[in-house]
Image (cartoon, rainbow, N blue to C red; front, side, top):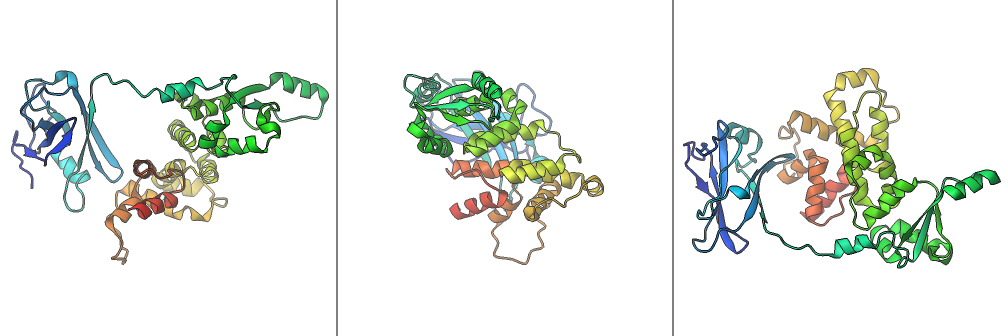
Length: 371
């Protein structure tokens, strides 16, 4: 066990970053500092191993993680003492909370340290250069025309033509960001330059946002929350996966799931392969099981939801370790995957450069394959 005496620290092995050697120092029994730390808080800091040279101006972020639970704290670089080899101490959570939530099966604690140099470093200009090409008519080689669906009357067609909106784009960029839009270029007469490619199943402002994202732009949170479903539908149809998943996050955060809409959201999540939304629906069902059983019909629900439902039970009850399975060959890491949140699964896949779109089973299978 780690010491419970106040101000007595334990050190990690050393690691290198920014040309210096560092150690993580933990104060399991609490610490004294100014300002006064929270009562019972475990302290953490980094200590520079080099005794020569100036203290680099660095930002720190400390994170405790276990399964789908995480806790972060950061350190303010403006308060560092440059003549000292130790950073200011940051408060984590309490010792009992660490024992209860963050120790793994071997009673080990994992602390991640993110370090960022706090100096001006010019950025690679490629992203800004790409964004300048957005809507550039002179260099574009394809035109998309967004209209409403065609109607039979001549008068209505004239009105439609006057309200259509054109967007200029570059085929080379589309080939690497949206294979579906690139395919439209290939199948269109004259490649979509002299004869615009007509799209009539999406609003102009939504398509503009889709193209803007493809060129490296960021869509405002308010827009994603206001037009969440429309953005998800467009991104799903044209294969802009990251935009679909980003819009899904804000749709989940801005949607209040009730017994009236729980099945609609579940069916929508299943149709569009929205694992995070499906997870939110499952969590709601588990937490409100009595009310849902009384008021909701599951006749239209697909039969493959049971694994998601079991995962939700495991998360809500925090009971994944009490697995009565007789399969002794199942690895602990695979058990963790089964109860891990969709956000955590996607983050692990993204860190390994693996596609993050797909159902819970798809994401877990991809992680197991790379393990």
